[in-house]
Length: 589
Image (cartoon, rainbow, N blue to C red):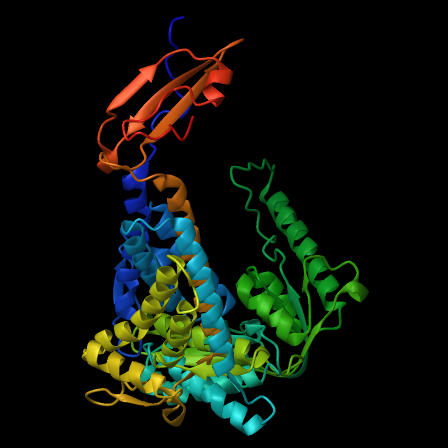
C-alpha cells in the first residue's frame, strides 16, 4: 500500500514551537518581563520614560501595571505576567511590580530545576506545598488593630506612607498619606472610590495639593447666571439642547421668501422652548447636561432663574449623579419618575487660574475631592496614579484590616517557613520547595540593589535576624548606608491582603507556565541512554492505521529517523513499531 503524506492542519503562516525552543521561549519571555520592571521596585526604585511610537506622547511612571500595559508583547508567558499585574492593580491597587517580579523569579528557579531534569509536574507540586506554607506564615504574622480606632488609623497612615514611598509623591508622603486616609475614612467602610474625585491643575507645587470636602466639577456656570446657589435641586441630564439650529449634514431647504426661513427657525425655537418648559416642570433650580447647551436654551434657563452647566463629561455626570443622589435623565415627559439630586451649596471656586464649580453638602456625605497641584502634566498624571494606588490599598485594608510588615520582613518570614517545610518533604519535590524560598528572598535582594546597597550583606544579616527570632525586622533603606531595623518601629507597614494576593497570584502564574512547558517539553532525549521522543501522526483507512513516525533528538536537531509504513490498528496498540535505538519501547505509539 502506498504511504499517505501528512495533511496540513494549520492555517498558512501558523508556526509551532516544540521541545527546547518552546521551553526557552516561555521561560525567557516571563523572566524578561520581571527584569523589565524590577528596577522600579521599592522606595529607591527608578522611574521609566515611556514614549508612544504612534503619537510620541511621553509618560513617566514607575507603576508596574502601567508599564506592562504600555508595551507590546507577543510572548505568551510574558502576557500572563502582564495579566496578573493588571488583576493585582484591579483587585488591590498596589503590588503590581512585586507580583510580576516574584512570578519571574519563581520561573527563573523553575528553569534551573528543569535543567536538572526534574519534571515540571514535580516542580508544580513543590511550589504548591511552598505556597501554602508561605501563606500560612504570612497569616500568622498579620496583626489586626481594627478594634482600636486610634491604632488602626495609625496603621492606615503607615500603609499609605509605605505605598507612597516608592512613588513620585515620596517627598511629600506625609501630606498625601494624611489626605488619602482622610478621604478613605469618609467612605465609612465602603470601597467605592467613585465618591473620591481627583482634580489635576498644573501650577504650584505638589505640596499645595489639598482635600476639599465636596464634589468639584471642572466646568463653568452659564453666562449671566447666579454664581452661587443654596439648597440646590439638581436635574442631571444627557440630552440634546442644540436643536434650535438646523444642522442636518447635506440637507437642502427650498423657500419662496426669507420670511419662510424665519418661520422655520421660529419652529425650531418653539420646539426647544417646549423642551425647556418640560425641564422647568421638574421644580429644579440647577440643570446639568452632558451635551452642549446652545445660547437660546441657556437664555431661557437664565430668564427662569435656573443655573445651567453644559458639556459635563460622562464620567463627571456619572459621579455627580452618584454623590448628589440623583439619576441621569434623557426624557422629561414624566417629572414624577425622575430622581433629582440635592446639595446645600453650589458655587464657583478658583484654583490656580481656572474657575471650577464646587458642590458642598451633597447627599452622599462621604464624597470629597482631592485637588492635585504640580509643575507639569506628566507629573500630575503620575501623582494621580500614585494616589489612586494608595486610596485603593487603604480602601481594601478597611475591609480586611490585618496588616503585615514591609521592607522584606514578610518575604523573609515566608522564606523561613518554606525552608522549614522543605525539610519535611521527600524526594525531588524538596528541591522545588527550597527554590520557592530562594525566589522569595530575591525581593529584599532587589530592594537593596535598587537602593545602591550591598544586597548580599544586608539580606544575609536580615536572614540571620529572622532566624534569631527578630520577626519584625526588615531592611531600612531610608537611612544613609542602609541597615536592618524593626519595621513596626519605623512604620513600614503593608496590607496583609496585598501581600497575600502577590504570593498567591505569582505562584499560580508560575505553576501555569511550568505546567505548559511540561506539555511542550515532553521527554528529554539523550543519544546515550535516555528515552527517545517520537511523534506519531495516524491516518486511518478501513482496516489499517498508517502512522508517520518521526524521531526528534536533543537541541532541536533535524529528525534523525523517519518512516512511513502501513500497520494494522491492533499491531499499533501492541507497540509493534519496534524499539528505539536506546533499547526502550516506543512511548508514544
